[in-house]
Length: 81
Length: 81
Image 1 (cartoon, each protein chain N blue to C red):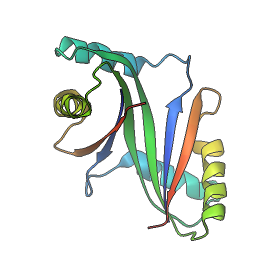
Image 2: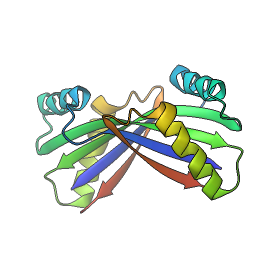
Image 3: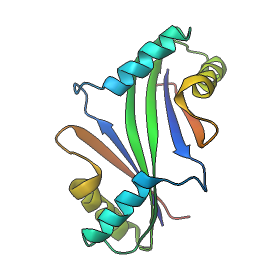
């Protein structure tokens, strides 16, 4: 089973990478671009085939390693394929 | 319109961040985790309301700034909400 984890900064947390992208897009002539936020996406290949167990395991991984839950949110998507 | 761009390393390109996560998950006691890849996700707020024009603009942004197309793939998701 494949899992995809999105880790994004919480609203209100300053995102300097996003701001840099926003400014550079403006400099490159792209107009009409508002707020830009940059996050991480982590793709995991899991041996687990049970969706509920896989989700619980990935949630543990997020809490312990993948996300800094003080300033970051995470979402988990599972793909049985 | 909101756009979400995923930028991931192409297959075959070494992903040291992914490998570091994989190894650390093993050290933390998570077993059954195979290949781990880390990518970026960039969320953009666009003023453009036409989906086709928005997609074309975001594609240009990816080619010019957001992705290094030599080693990275990108996918674009648009969300009209």
